[in-house]
Amino acid sequence: MDITRAHLEDWMRAYYFSADIDIGSSGVQNFSMAELRDLVGFGLDDFDRVVFDDSPSCGKQSLRQAIADKWGDGDPEKVLTTHGSSEVIFLIMNALLEAGDEVVVLNPCYHALRNIAEYIGCHLREWNLRFEDQFVPDIAEAKKLINAKTRMVVVNFPHNPTGATLTAEQQRELIAAVSEVNAYLVWDAAFSELVYESAPLPDPVLTYERAISLGTLSKAYGLAGLRVGWCFAAPELLERFVLWRDYTTLYLSPLIEAVAERAIENADSLRDFRLERARRNLEILAHWIGQHRQFVEWVRPKGGVTAFVRMHGVDDIEEFCHRLGQEQGVLLVPGSCFNNPGYARFGFGGPTADLEEGLARVSLQLNTCTAPYLDSQANQLTVGQEA
Ligand SMILES: Cc1ncc(COP(=O)(O)O)c(C=O)c1O
Image 1: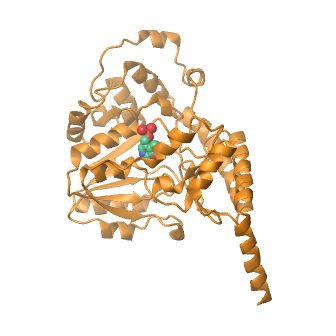
Image 2 (image 1 turned 180 degrees about the horizontal axis):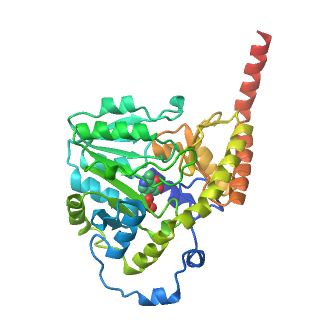
Image 3 (image 1 turned 90 degrees about the vertical axis):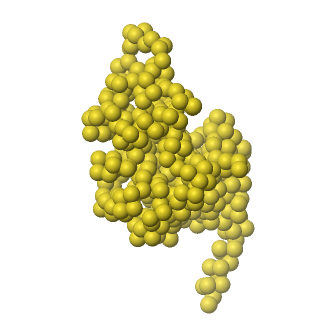
C-alpha cells in the first residue's frame, strides 16, 4: 500500500516558495539569524565553540535539560529531541502501533497525525470537529470512540487548522477516558502557548504515564527552519522511539542543538514578540470576515494562528486557491488539504501588512469569481421580499 499523499505538503511545494504573500501557513513569521542573535544573544564565539561531533540519540543533555526546565517537570530523562515534531510523530507511530490497532484521530487533522497510522494498517476512528458545533470538541463523542481495543488517541490542541481547543476540565475528562482503557495519548502541543482566551493547558505527561506530548520550535517561536521538535514521555517509551531513530536521522546536529538551547532559554521573548502581533492580526481577520459575510463564515480561533473558514459561492475552493496563488501571488490553503473541501485555512501569524494586502487580494478574487452566486443571492432576496 502506498502512503496517502500529504496534500498540504504538495500545496506548500507549489506555493510557499513562489507566493509573494503568505496568509495560509500555520506558524508565526520566522526569524532571521540576525534577529535571533539579537533576541537571544548568540555570538560568534558560541558558533566557534561548536564541534561537529556525533550527538546522543536522545539529544544533547543540556538541551534536554533546557526543554525539561522550560516545559516539563525538570527531568531531562523524559525528553527526546528530534528534527521537528514531524520526526517524533513518525517514531512514535512506528514504535507503538501495529496493523489492526484502533487509533482515534481528529477530523480535520494535520496529515502526519493520521496518515502514518493509516499506512501501518491501523483502523482509524475519527473524532469530528464540526463547524455546526463551533468546532467545540465533544468529549461525549470521544468517549464513544474510545474502547478496550483503542491503542492510541492522537489529538492536537489548540488545533490546526480550526484553532479549537479544550477546556482544562475537558482535558481531564479526555485523559481519564484514555487511561481507563490504558491506551497511549499522543498530545500534540505545537500551538500550546499561542492562546487568546485562556491559559495554556497542562502537559498530560505530568498526570498520565502513557501520555506522550509533542513540542516544536516551528510554530510559536518562529524557528520552523531550525527543525527542532521534542517529545516528553516515560524513559522506557523513549528507548523504543530511539530504536526507530537509529534508522532515520540518528541525532540532531550539534550546531542546531547549540542554537536551539539558547533559543529555548529565551523562548518567552521569542513567543511574546510574535503573539502580540498575532492578537492584532486576529482582529484584522475578524474585521475582514465581518465585511465579507456573504462569502465566508468562521469560528473565531481560540489558539494557534489559523482559522478554518467556510466559504460560500465558490464552487471549487481548491481551484479558487490555485488561482489566488497563480494570479494574485497569495498563499491560502484549501480545506481539501485537510479532507474538508468546503473550507480554506487562513493563517494570521505573519506580518500585519502582508495579512492586510493578502486579504485585499482575496476580496478581489472573490469579487471576480462569485458574480453568479451574488446574483442568485440577490434574486433570492427579491423573491423573499415579494412573498
Ligand atoms: C499540528 C502539527 N503538528 C506537527 C507539525 C510538524 O511541525 P514541525 O515538524 O515543524 O515541528 C505541524 C506542522 O504544521 C502541525 O501543524
